[in-house]
Length: 296
Image 1 (cartoon, one colour):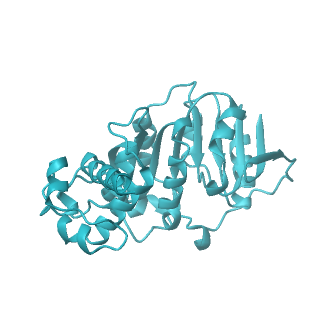
Image 2 (cartoon, rainbow, N blue to C red; image 1 turned 30 degrees about the vertical axis):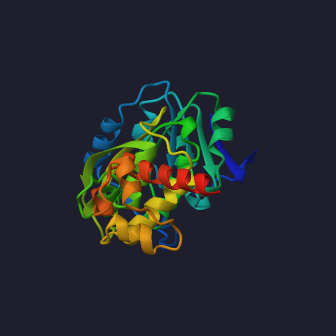
């Protein structure tokens, strides 16, 4: 059964769509559409995901279904989220022609979906999320999905290689920054493969890459106040060339930390943000929280 759903925020209602004629879809720049067509790359992605038939698969931005078809062949059913109404209708025709069971299309913005409510409605456990995200809004979508990490088993996405390099970067590298620390605080991150420009139509201006995010069921370390943790990480990398001593002395958003404060947590005040690992940012954030509590 193929169903098209139109979602309004967290509520979902069924409609009976009109049957459009088979048509060639022109990529829309405002939606950041670049359609994957390289069969070798598609095969590599499907293999890397390692699906089981019972998996609760969710694809974001299926486009014309180049990745959807081979993914659907590996599972009993799946759900896709497509913002473009014309593509959603076209996808219904493309997938319907092969009589796939239990295939659901949600025509909505992935930023507006309540993934917890959707997982409960489907009733097949945590999502395995996959997608070729629009590069212009990829980071907001990733942060949105992290809000629902309790109903997500893992995520496999294709983004511009520059962003994937930042997400998976290690300390002491030029790519390491705020995005690296925040993503690695919540998830295990793994770089999977590089995708050339020619694998898409139209070819994007940048090389792409596929990576995996696996949300931690139990984080290796948890900040006392995650909003303070996020603030410390952001402000630190806003001044990445400064030492921690300078950052925590001249910053109006962060309290001053003296030498003894740094000594308590075993971090050198002369260190720079790009040298710190995730757990060290947590130690800094927790120190800020404790100092605020003791001074109040």
